[in-house]
Length: 487
Image (cartoon, rainbow, N blue to C red; front, top):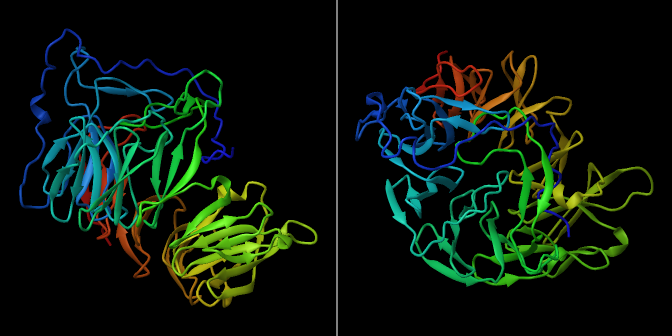
């Protein structure tokens, strides 16, 4: 059975630092409170300060800045007379106990147990709060506890929280109820559909929101006489409130490996075809037949004689890019196919043994590879203006490419605008707004917005940057501050 994560990096690991458990603070009773721990309050207004002057880690931030999730230690829970958090090599923390908070745009806070999922724009945020799965609509500024939700996690630190999944556009939420039940919730209307699938371990909504992949444990594959969820042997710390990671190691998986099923989120139907399903493509599923032919929605795209290998797919319009086995070498010409379309292109791709784990998911109207771009609607080819450069960030058809000088190019029309002369590492992004080496760029407007000081933590679509004023590489102290870039 092909494992869906792919090869995890094996890093030489050092011994993990000791970490206290989640029990009561030393000495029993409630931990002493620090008077400085009172967070800022400015109901009805936007505040620039997030958190307090205590150890802090950023967990997540909305693209529009409407909420931020932080972890802070604001009390002396280990009884050593100070409030401090220390970090080990693998992101593990020790000292005083971290606690996560959601902080709204107006500075109001609420304690949570864990972040679960959110939509790309940040409107929808799912968290575990008081042992219950809760859904936040940032636009309406409302919270809803989901009825009967089972917020149980599996503790796998390289995966997101198990309890729920939201598609990128924020159209659907999938969450668990007890008894192998999965609920599909339409986020616009609140309508729900419940589906039962024995042995279900995880449900992962496809980013386009039409399908969900179900990971189901149906067999005792390791022969221990029971079915158990997979777990990863790793030195990596727990997922929540994790500190900076220096190194970690992985040693494979324990438990029983899952099988893949697909849930049609529009109808509630479950498609159980195992390895025959390659990927969702819009409303349909791309299938590879037993002899190797490719089909989409019952229509053959490529015959078995072609020995097709999929390079990437797009949902809108429904498109599949694939190669046939070349006569020699690893490079092969790419064919663009979809309903009523089969067009050879001048794009080439390298055939890979593990191609199923490396499919590109094109969400822009143009796909590029090896110096050539192809219009996904018509198949028309054009040169790739980013070819030969490291692509730092992208949004739509715009690419920020490394310099010097830095430039924003458009792969749709080949245009180029020079915007800066330094940095090549992306620090933060929100839609078209990105931060590189402390400088903020707007890819949509193709302009440099200005620079900021401090350690960059996040950015919003308006160009505000969330920074720490000091960061020594360990666990820094808050608060975080939203700042506007200076020209």
